[in-house]
Length: 73
Image (cartoon, rainbow, N blue to C red; front, side):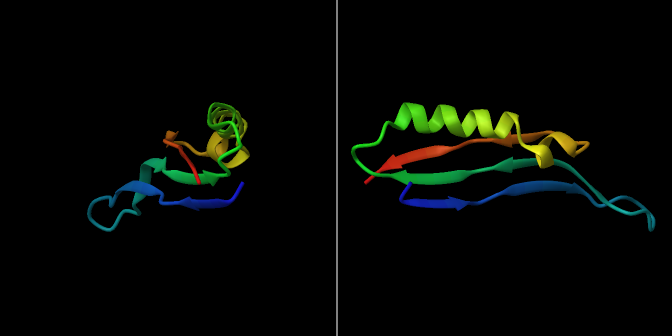
């Protein structure tokens, strides 16, 4: 892997009348740059596998989506 960046976006319900807010969804938008010799299809599949097995995403009480973008040099 040459470069990895993530621009996560989350939606928060701010609650009402002094009640604590909470996140209701999150979307990860990782951008992964790989070498031109690397397999982009395999890189995306590995990223999807890692997201499905993610301890943090699986521990939250709201959905976490992942929209990975694989770019080649």
